[in-house]
Amino acid sequence: MKNVLMFCLSTILIITVAHAQTIKEEEEEENITGFQKYNLFTGAHLNVGFNPGNFSLGVGPYFGYSLNKYVDVAVGLNYNYISQRSQFSSIRYRQSVIGPTSFVRIYPVKFLFAHAQYEYNFIKYKVLPGNGLPNQSEKINVSSFLIGPGLANGRDDGRSFYFISVLFDVAKDINSPYTDLQGRIDPIIRIGYNIALFEDAEPRSSKKRRGIY
Picture 1: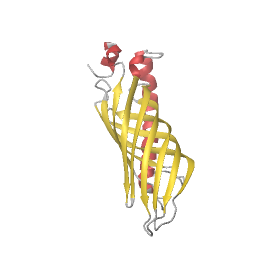
Picture 2: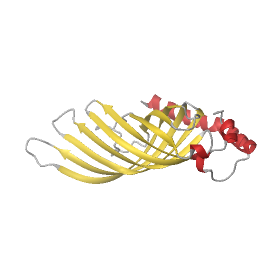
Picture 3: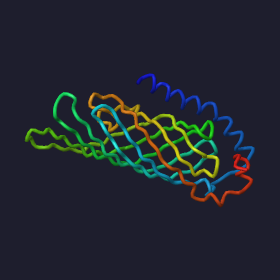
Picture 4: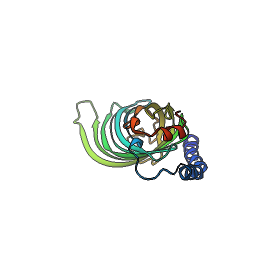
């Protein structure tokens, strides 16, 4: 798992450094400045997490802006339901998680991206001991930092596209909804659809520079 996390971190770092200068030069060459409404997008993801004894299912709508052909940024809201079972007893755990989020995606090529996301989660936590014992509940707040690679389908073709990613919570908070009862990080698989809001408003010259024509 450590090797996986190091790979993800290294990927994001390498991509960022390798393309920073290229992005600057291309933006200067295109001479496009200021807010452009055709760079706005929305979308949503569905995520599934799994590990022995653990299951999670969630959804997250978002709204964002393409800074250039390499970088997307967005804000959104996540909701997750998590079920966990102890390997050593009949105790079960349930979590309802909701919270704001923001993320950045970096595309070295149109079909591959590195994803980094911050979440602040409000968690309603339940313990179900069974055997006639009363249930227990509490509310906690937890920050998470998710990173990982992803694949996109047709981002340069009008920017409405499907995607899939695999993310890991490298913050590793003991109360993270993305870790199991032993504190191990659960991989989170996310699939979703990204929708360009003003595709028809984009100038043909800009599309040509992005390789659509």
